Length: 487
Ligand SMILES: Cc1cc2nc3c(=O)[nH]c(=O)nc-3n(C[C@H](O)[C@H](O)[C@H](O)COP(=O)(O)O)c2cc1C
Image (cartoon, rainbow, N blue to C red):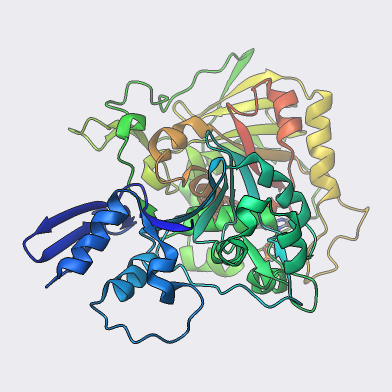
């Protein structure tokens, strides 16, 4: 029998005629669990709450929830309260078969809609953005946009996923269902649609739930990343064992590398270059054509100093168990984590021999890691091949791009962000935002120095791994920037 139950994480407190329901939901701005107060609760409502906490409530007991559009229920009636609790994402909905719970709808946020079983001639289909994850109970299916997880527990249903990859008629779903589940076929199909993981096909053979995202051109990966990092509602986790008691495992701000040579860097004196901030902003532009005269070690040192040198080592969130090491640099960084490091492929630079270097932001020097090896040459070649995408100018034609004097590769120590953001899920999003602020800083400082700056879109973590010898899940490249002397 299909039934409703309180979802995991809901707490109920009954005091006289008042029922306080503490939801598992909070928001990013308000970390406290949201509450629902039901006042003047009568015996039928209390009975309903008791059932939802124990064995569940049969769906046909309150029939207005499923197919009927109109009901005579008042807003305080158990029927209407059940509807409200469902909409607020507090109820799971499951259908049992001969093997126990066969399929289950588990809300992830408020905002669930009722969906009647469609008529015979309609077709339904799995979302293109669907994601299938095995769990202890079976298979969990979600999409970045769906407010609920669809859980298949009865393994006889697994093949349904394969079927629903293409548009399926309601009749074919009915035909597929084993006898013990087919008796609930209308509720079963409703449940599929209520999850918003499966939708009714439109004229383009797309599920209606996907139509807007497809029209806007969202890729699966971008939509998943976007929804994951921009959601406002967060679920309170009762089991806080994942939270670290202290900061002992947080990666330190400073990470030593094995170098074969150290090149100290200097800075230009202030009077040598244009320092009017507003003029520099006006002047800033991408320059992709280089002079044969290489950049000087002095100019490169100044660029690095005003972009990336470490001004100060600090302790963030002092006094709290979660305190961690932070840094202050000329650029901003979320949480002062500064997980981005600079690696330089130096092709030519007056005063510094060609090679692959790490910028030591603490003592403002370059640590030579190797000569310009094949992977470094390949990174330079990739930079050349992805230059000339200037949409507004014919400055560099395809195939005529020049290699830069210096290719700066930004690599992130992901673990530093992950150690602080394991719960928020924002680690990678914030790394990319940090990279964005570094791009702009490099543009402005390079402009002030009269250098030719160009940010790049394409880069290869694989080539960086080969060049640096650093496993890509330890330090991964997230951005590239070219520097030369302008033509
Ligand atoms: C994140 C980012 C990625 C970029 N990727 C490339 C690229 O791959 N190739 C290229 O030639 N220019 C690239 N550019 C430079 C842009 O094409 C340039 O900023 C844009 O055409 C506007 O020109 P402007 O910088 O002179 O104002 C990039 C710039 C940024 C900020």
